[in-house]
Image (tube, rainbow, N blue to C red):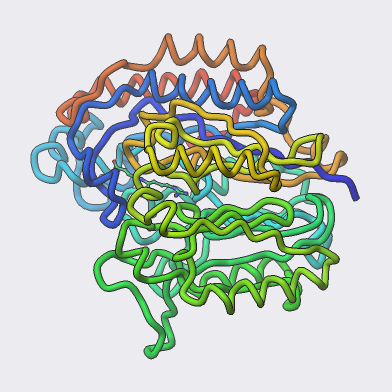
Length: 445
Ligand code: SUG
């Protein structure tokens, strides 16, 4: 069946800030406590959505989440009015206050894992909200992620939204950031490739030593089971623990796939040859031939890949049968990466175009173009069955720009998180947003 891929970009929330919360994510750690610009961050994200929608790519958005998370703050003993809670948390536990305020749901590649109807046993599109249990500031996102997905994909004849896996280390799940579909075209059955960083119940398996491996094999297997994927079309690949220790905290920082193309760094996987071989054999079963575009360390080092986010790009299928690579501006500014990309586009292989965006505000927290989007391949009937108010149009773009201009600050310093007015501003903005998107029950407030 014909299907079209929609990218659901995370609309950056009004509390976007740099709190250095993600150990193992180089950018997050490097920019800790610098001032952020939430307004600019949201506008940069909207500009990307608008441009890709204007090009005819399926584009929609996922809304930001309510912040601060008062439930979290109250559950750990902060009491009194909202203002009291904020004042006490700012004084006694400023890092936890930053966690409660994080705008991290903007990185929707981590919202869920998605298996389109062509891949699942019951012919529905399946979503499993990711528990993100490796980081406190992300570990409570899944409740609203599941709620938002259910609000948008409410038709249970077409869609199934699963709750997050149990939030325990054995089931560390980071969603689509470690998941790729490889297929002939978006509407046909695909090989679903799950990349994991460690195995909970195999003490002999290798694992990173310095930074955490956020995704476990056990979590990937559980998601595949929930989605009713067939064993022959499901492949589990171990990420190279050494690159996790160099700042590759998700597979989408070192590899990206689309259609039959896997664009990857030669150090991405623990066993490169074995992984490709497994993929090739599984893909033969769906009548697709793997086009592996390998980037050698000699051309782009792991450090350059992490600094430029070359692989945290979007690979988008175009009508001419080729693909565009959507990259952050940092790729153009890195000499090795820029030279590599020139050669790639000239090579006559699948990627014939580069589209770059200034996403600096998100990048400074380790979030590039691919982090900012959740892919959902939908048939025409499924696309018609989802809530239409989140689909990016020129009109929605302008409405949201005006909404951002009205509600967002253009500077947030770490100390601003103690300002009780900020909590009220965020709340007011989200009330307004749920009306704009036509989703009155989007939030639990
Ligand atoms: O989980 N950064 C996010 C970036 C997520 C990127 N997503 C993908 N690669 N798909 C993370 O590390 C930083 C927040 C802070 O430090 O304030 C943060 O959460």
